Length: 269
Image (cartoon, rainbow, N blue to C red):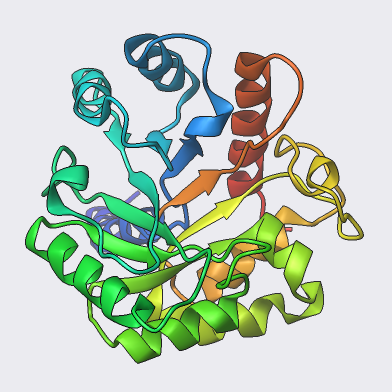
């Protein structure tokens, strides 16, 4: 190769290398957590150790019991307590309840079991209180509750009208209450307020929780469809694994679900 050709090749490498690096940095790969209902095989320290070994980013949807202890145990191994699971109806959430994960990029996953004349104000105050602590609030649509669907969550968020209040998409509750065919449209509408997502293996024609909540490597619902829909709307929030009622060895279920997650991110099909 002549010196002139070397200079051309070197120039091309200098131009293309940053582009290739940028492409790698932009690869779609949300942080992946697991709901607390997929654990329960030891203390907080043991759980955190297992999740660290398996490659999860932390735990989500935890209860308020021993919350400070759990936050400390997870941070000790470089993982995160992503979210606290609460309900609101008449009264707002007190600041002390969610103080342990303050200013750590955490969230409250907020259900509304019963709608009352005070609910909108209670949700607004919860969002404001959490905002002061650096904690975001995501309405969690739950089958059988007053807020059970994504449209209901978005409508309530619009009424509350607080910048710290968003919504969370939960695949199992979506398939239980809404039309699978509307997935992309629902996520597109939710985009401005979509703070978080949960998924799990599920059957498209499932009805009971045993068919709508499975390890991620099971079920007929095409998980790549969900990931593509999220990528299309430039979703940059966390995804969590729903594990409610899943039978079998919890550690093995988590291992299989993580393997499935990595496989989903590695394919464009």
